[in-house]
Length: 89
Image (cartoon, rainbow, N blue to C red; front, side, top):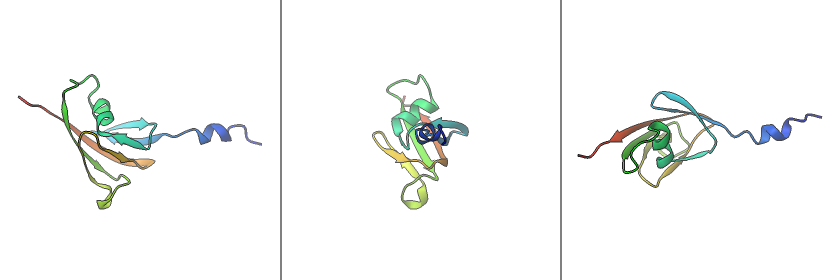
């Protein structure tokens, strides 16, 4: 009898924390590149990031690092990322 059951099925929001700031993302899998864009909007396209994560759905207790081209599966709530901009002189 509930009309909203179909809308609830389409709600796929994942609560993550990036550099201490809460973010809501729509995809269960998040990439190195999208994390860079979320952490540093409008960054130099040639920028390089150091990305560490905790509490993800991954081996080694859900913690690790990402490099360009890699991605990780996040939990519905509680996955956190530390994204640092690496500068090259």
